[in-house]
Structure formats: C-alpha cells, structure tokens
Image: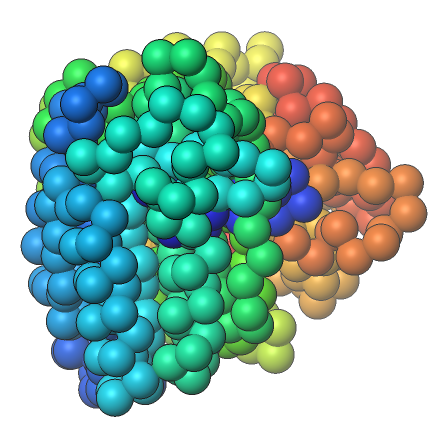
Length: 443
C-alpha cells in the first residue's frame, strides 16, 4: 500500500481537497459513446489477504474497477493480493506500457496504507513488520507511482487511492491516515478520505468510496472533477459525514470517462424536455405521477462563458419528486406559495438534488458558481428578482474579498457559502434552509 498510500496522502491534503482524483488533459473523442482516440492504460491493485489485519472488500473493489475501466476503453494491468515483488513488477510493467503508448495513465489501489514521517507507503500482502523502521523496506513508497508516471512522459495521469481502511498494525505503527502528496503537472490524485482519517471497508461487496466511484464513472458527460464531486456527495451521505473524500489536481483541460452524448449537449437557447431515464434500483419512478412540469429544468446558454443555467429556480414540485424518490422530507411551502414557487432548502439538499437529477437524466448538473450566477444575471439569462429579494445558493465558498474563490465550487460544505440575490452577493450558513437554487451545466 506504499505507492497507493502515498497517492492517498497527496489527495488528502487540505489545500488539495475534492472528491475523488485524476490527472487530466484534453482527450479527443471519436464521437459520442465511442472509444476514445487516445490510448488509456490502467494499473489496478487490490490487497486484502493480510495476515494480521485482513480486509474483506479490496479484491472485490479492484476486480469491479478493472472491469469498469475495460468498458471505458482502458488496457488494464491487474494484481490481486500482491506481495512486494509482484507489486513492484506490476509498476514496472505499467511504466513501460505508458512509455510505449504515451497514453492516459490511471492507477487504482485498494488495501492498507500507512504514513511514516510524512511519507506514504502501500502495504503488500505477506509483509512482516514489527517495528516502524521496517516500513520503508517492507512497504512500497506511494511516490513511486507518481515517479513512474512522470518517467513515462504522458501528459495525463490519474491516481485513485481507496486505502487507510484501518491501521494494519496491532501496535499502531505509523501515523493514522495518509500524508499529502505532490504530483507533476497534469496529475489528478483522489483519496477515499481526508488526511489522517480512516475510510470504511464496507459491509457489502464494495467499499462506500469505490461503490460510488463506479456509479459516477458510468454517467456520460461528467468531467473528471464532476465525477469525484458526485463521489464526495454519495460517500458523505452514506457515512453520515464520517468519511469525506479528498482530491488534489493539476489538471490541464477536460477528461471524460464517458464522453457527452448528443442528448446531453445544450442547445443554443434551452434544453427541451426529455423523458426521465429509468431511476436506479430502489428509487420509484415519477412517471406515474404525470407531473405538469418536465423532470429537467429549462436551460439558457451563456454561449461565450461555456455553461448553461436554469431559467428559473428549482420549483417545489420538482424538488418534491426528488424527496419522494430518495425518501427524505420535503420543505413545507410558504403561505400562499404554489407548486411552481421556488424550493427553499439547505445547501447540501440543493447539492444532493443536482446529483440525483444527474443520475436520472445522464446530464451533468451542479449548482452555478458565484461568478456564473452574476454573469447570467447581468446577461439577462433567466428570471431574477428585480426587487433584490431573491436569495439563491451557489457552489462557491464565500470570502469577504473575492480572492478567486468565487470561480470554483466547494467540494464540501464550507463555513460560509456565497449566495446571490439581485445585484448583491453575501455569505450564508450552509445549514440555512430558506434559500432557493438553480442548476448549471458546463458545455
């Protein structure tokens, strides 16, 4: 778990947070749903058969991840319950294949990992570690993964570390969790949990992290960052906030596991209503209710800014469909409010709605950034309250001064979220439940 542990540490860094995890560069596509033109190579490792602290799910996670990556056009090198020699040989094979093809590189690790003096180590099976000084000799330095990718010379690398499932040593050797790692430009590192924290192995076939990752990778049109934002939302919800995935990124351009489909491409003015996609297992369909409004919001495009935004705030009726399908409470309407009135919810509820709608439709929705909201309001895109009474969520973290923070989405609930209304901006507690929201979609 040395190599992976290190990668995990890198992604766990507080300043590098964000779900999920991948090295990005622009990848040309042959067409919607087609195999990408650029080669893709992955090394997938799952270690669970440890003598002192066996893990139930890493091999399942690795097998399922390898199968998913093959579906997505990757050539996959896989190792299960690998000892130190097998792990190092697999890493050497991975580097050689990357060097020959100059392909997109992806490294996935599930198993034990530890941190010692700021260094992360992936733990092979069959190790005999009695003292801390033995960890560097018995484990595999997680930085070796990053060095191999850099040595190969390819421009896009993704490191995914589903490690730190518990301390593999009964005497607590090494530090809890992983340390932050620094990768070369064009690298995306994703950690299953935050620095110094422990991730869950899971009670089903897969860990909560890998289960959510496999689902998000299957949605067409989600960029790499959007995939891991979906993972963060899902893992945080399933673990009641006890596990928060983190990422570190130096991406260039965009990367998609699955390219956008024609159905997800925005039109110049708006996106027409579409029939809802079949809901995931366990979520009842809203089709039988014969709603008066379509499942998807009406979008208007900011052609020069690269995004579309919903013309109006998400309505009570639309939010009630989500609440009914996900088994959660819906907000009570204000006195005199109709079904078309805006839904007033917390920041997390708005984020969850966006993730749910993406699963239903296959489109990549999110909250708009503060800068996008302002751009849309000034350009007259959509309906905005001229009396400055509207208060809407964005996905941006609030700062008294801009400092560039309004230009990106916060991966987890910050202390204060940037909100917009009319021609003003402010900050709000993410637990406030009296704000409306609209959705954005990148072009």
